[in-house]
Length: 419
Image 1 (tube, rainbow, N blue to C red):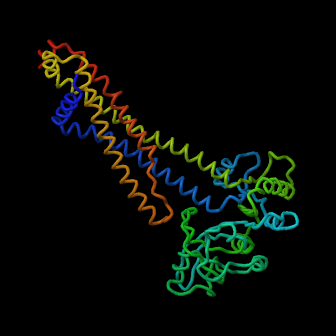
Image 2: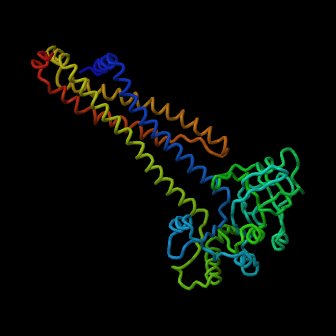
Image 3: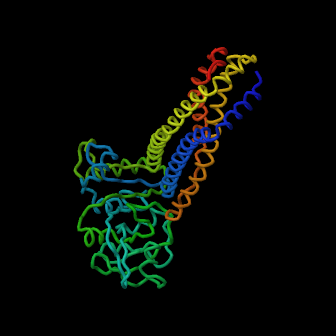
């Protein structure tokens, strides 16, 4: 059997039914492109979150509230539904700032978050009010001031109404004027602007870009904006990574004492290192990619069913041709290979086209996202490309095998009689 002859015969046969062949290829193109797009965007999101977390550095501990007896994931789900944990207080921050007890701790940030409208001179914008400690710039090292200063500890203690603006918020409220020293109004109260951040390429929070944040002393935020007395989260920076385990144990002991917890199973907080957070992100990202990839692969399966249907129709239409070829010496194997190669040509052509199309669409989607989120990385998942191509080729073999065997089994005499 001459493979080159068989391939050329298969291409001629496909070319004879262009519309049907194009529709068959299209089904595979859509499936492969969907796999490439979904997995590439999923990998891009995973890389974005990983880069954001890594920007904090390895010496940071994240202290988040959680519902006693539940995992952090379960707690987040419950808190979204309205359950609140109110035990993390500013007292915990002050205790951690005690250098005699915690000489290795360099900075502590406590946060409380809410949404309000900020306005100045007729300009108004919905903003995320981020109440934080004076140590915030030491925690998020990517936060750099374009002008002015960050608020001081004395301003936090005295409930001073001062604010630091995100770069976009400063432009939107003050246009082309310098906001330093001027007032903005939040919840009917005047806040003096003491600083403005440089543009930050970060994640959006609840639909609000980091550059639209207004940063206010955490004590002021709790008492004058939110009307509460509890924090949602804390971050702790240690002087060296070697102190991470010690800090985790010491902070756990302190919080259990402050929160009157004697049973570790009833902890109302969870302390995670950056390494643990990254591991969690990677696990979630892998599961998400597998799930989305599986959903996209369903379209490949549908395309495979379409190929089988069309190849069976082709076998029926070309029965006389099969009989003629067999009468001229073609073996069952020759006929089997011809129809199997036709199926593979369709799926391989669809696979290559789908990869190209999926890559282009992924690039266009990334460019659109980057208009709102400049740090979004354009990622092409080579694993997705390889898997999509191999799966499409395998589908060509599997779904093309039955029609090819049907063609090979035909009796040459009966095939020649077929009209």
